[in-house]
Image (cartoon, rainbow, N blue to C red; front, side, top):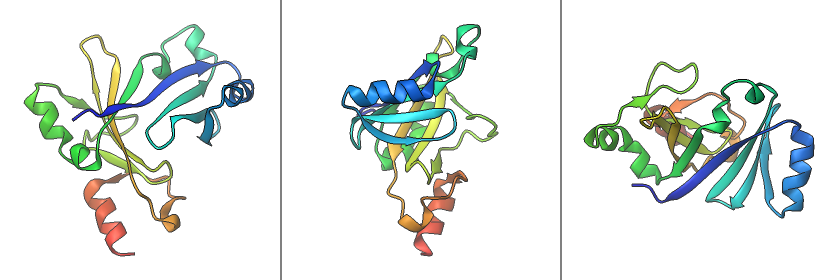
Length: 153
């Protein structure tokens, strides 16, 4: 199921300074929002997420204990069954109550989350081909909702 590394995360104190630094390293800028920026490590395959904030200096920050593994779209659709078969429980992401894999159109990816025995956050993640007219949507969709939406375009 796992094909490679999708993303790794790093906490940073100043996002603007870090964006300049990672650009100098030759990494290609992918996208940003208010407190995060992503740079391609291998374009279309893996990236590094930079998370601005001082809280990581004094308390847990998700970027310190999280990685995502790259899988295919079809594998992600079957991920809950696969995790169950290896006796690993999926966990909800953020404010979500469902453990079902979900799609983020504005980022062009989909995910399901689980933890390792030490409580490190792990993720199975894939790229999703998003039609241009849907790339602005920040809402998260289940696979069924997404496939229905796309088929009605």
